[in-house]
Length: 339
Image (cartoon, rainbow, N blue to C red; front, side):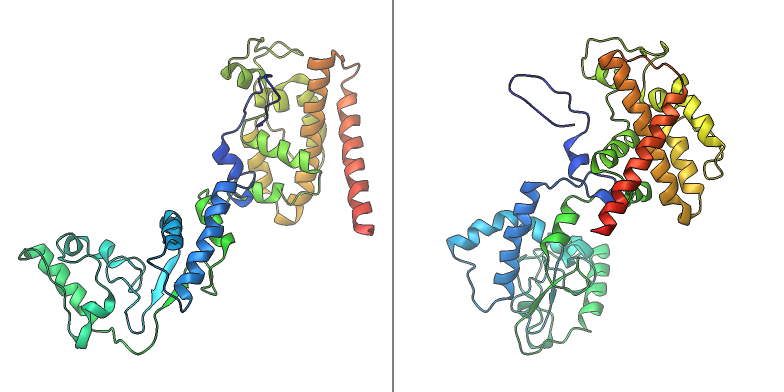
């Protein structure tokens, strides 16, 4: 996927963003060192903000400000005296900062850096604006005033909370997952990484599901000069063709169709995913195990033909190869359980 050896050119089949995305979000889960470094540095921000010592004017603190924007994603404040909490910038009242909830008021505020203590001193609201507020801004002001009536300051230092963890304590893991967030969780990829097959097979399944195996069509997109036709049958060689519609692949899927757990012949990776999702969850792990053996056997046989000119003597060889693979993986799994 990503490799370079001297001056020899390699084809990068997958974008880096997909590689570093967490596995349960459909990525490969490779560690993003830069993001992890930010998360580790942010841990110092957490310690300093919750600690008794004020280092806001130090050179060390200035060095930490570079990661502060990431730290703000999960940071909120529990207000006591209000002296350590920014009225506009910090999340302390509601789910987001007041500058977001009341952006019109924030834009015309005389001092955007006031603390909660500055504003609510002596139980009154001490906000000043650069000009007289107009109608819709007055409505915002009334809403803000109503909300502030429920706030009562007390003695004690304000406490920082971490919203990305249920225990409200900072963790590098939670910030890292947020930085590499990939959207909605991918149920198929979650099962792929649980599948009891070797890691290289899991990675192959991941690449197949993302249409990133080195088919002729994919390589041509990367300026490869070779032919785009399948060496076995002459059709255009796409991922779906190699794994599902090439005659040798069709032969294997028709054979597997006779098993109760499959039931139909897939013609694409999307159809295979739909078959998988339609089955009872109890059988999904077994089904994925069989799929892995079939897809890897087809891929290996295709590579034997392309790179070593090994001609298939009989279509039944693909069935034999699949059974051998599944048996071998089962033995490896049994040996691992015995250790």
